[in-house]
Each structure stands twice: as C-alpha cells, then as structure tokens.
Length: 190
Image (cartoon, rainbow, N blue to C red; front, side, top):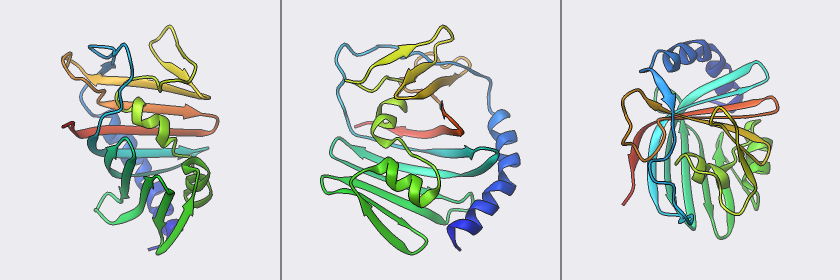
C-alpha cells in the first residue's frame, strides 16, 4: 500500500480518531512533578497513537519509539498494525524506510517533510514527550502553561487524577499549518 493510499485511509479515519482522542479520559494540563535543574537525556521506550493534520487533511496511526541519546527508532503504523514508515536516527544521520524505499539524510525534519509531507521535530520531541523544554534552545512558557520553542506551540496534558506521572499522557504540537498529537499508552524508562 502506497503512502498516498495510506494518507487517504488516514483522512477517512481522522474523524473517527478525533472522536476517539476526544473521548479519552478527561485531560488536565501537565506540569512535570520534578523539573530537572539540568537536562539529562536518558533512554526510553514509548508507544501510543499519533494524529497528524496538515491544513485540513489528517492522518492517524500508532507509533512505537525506542530512544537512546545517540540512537532513535520510530515506527509509524496504521490502526491495524501495518508499518507505514520507520525512521532510524544515529551518528550517520537519519534513514527513513517508507513505501518500499529507503531515504537517508542528515536532517530528520527535511527528510520527513519531503517524504511524508509533514515535519517530525524528532530532536526536540525527545524532550517534549517528557513534558520538558529542549535544552540549549530558547523557550517561553505561556500563561496557559503551553511551551513555545523553535516556532512550535506545545501543550501537555495528563489524565484527571494522575498527578504522579513523570510524563504527559498527551502532547500537542502546532506550527503554521501543521499539528501533531501524540497520546502515549506505554512508557518505560530503564
């Protein structure tokens, strides 16, 4: 199945996905329990749902992410589990496997924009998925608790009553005509 076919399928599922994501448990703004005084990049594994909307066109799927400071593997799958894309970042750059093709680049944002039609800010998302600003980059907290960094507005949410979680349940990124929503169901940190 081509990326174009998957995008069309994703558009049909977008309405359903929006309803499902909205029907989740009541969400409250997330603030880290213990804000680190110095950012330390530690390994983690995360999985969940992913919704991407460019202009008025959207896609929905699942993600699995294995992160280590020098290596990332992100798999994006359809709601039924077929792999749409697999992104691997290491010291040699970024490799994107999608639609039976492999494309390599030094820059993950340029590569995902050219290949998938939307930008995945992986370098900063490593921090944002934890509810933290990316280190060594100017950022601003807005009055509503949102974070602005590198042109993105990032909002973090937790489930109502879940005050002990170290990471947000949902992260919403918005920049220009693009919005990305991650809802994390699985989180492991060694």
